[in-house]
Length: 84
Image (cartoon, one colour):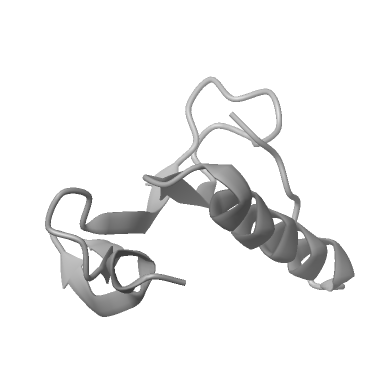
């Protein structure tokens, strides 16, 4: 992995969690925040859900998404995985 793809800092920005990389041209890797459902088929309006926005693509993003989906499916606490 080259230096520009290494993960750097993480911080909270305006109610959302942002994972940043050491890449000045594409610093954001992932943003996560809590949203309130409205008009989604998978969730009742008004319920909270976690929204993840990937700013990366390719094998790195695919791997992260697969890991997140696998963890969500293993949880017995009622986590439902869906993609918008």
